[in-house]
Length: 332
Image (cartoon, rainbow, N blue to C red; front, side):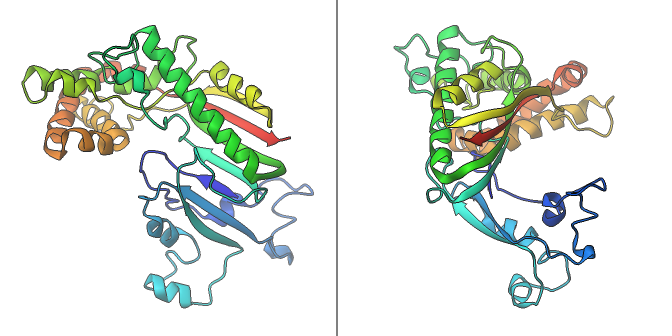
């Protein structure tokens, strides 16, 4: 089994999860139910290996310290935990690398799982940053509300990346293996309407960049060289690539309404909503922003995001919501 991580240098962390419970059978009293197949019934659970993959910058040690039974069992340091007699029925390993390339030996994986990663592009399309190109995204840092050529460049990059992803997994998976994927999606047929991702990156975040330009803190050229490498696909965008690849059968492919990143304790507190939006933007894009303009200017940027979001708190709370694409595929 190979869970694949975020493609934006964020850590793969299984925080406060009981992995064995999460992956074991649950509910009911049938033949395959937990009650009839648990250790309490005298049957040993099957052993399996779980490979966690993320970019090399990921802190895999944090992940491994959270895996039960080595976590939160009072055994002390990591070394003491490893030396203890504790046992789990699975074996965990970290595999650094981009999931747009090969990660595992051929025909070695039974199940792949990737959550909220595939909307991250491997790169911003080069023509989007080329002043000579009709796809040049002048004055913007995201494709929400951009011109058609820019949106099509993002769409093509997403489909190219997904094709590479499927091609690699088709070589690594065993015949009949299963793959479960979830990523940001959209309901609109128009790729310039990126839904929740568009509201997150294409409104107050965009305006905050413009503020820095108008205040002389950065140049317009500096702003225009920064674009968020995220694309929320439609069902059709996704389906076209899977069908063209031909290695996988689509068992289920849906888009559904998800939640909002604005999780607040006091919905009437505009300042709290503003902070929540700024924190959401920063948690997703902060590493990229820091690399582009430095930490000091990054602080200035997200302060302005918070100020603008606070002024539009009610509107954001009502309208900012994500849609997700969920796919179940089988290798044929």
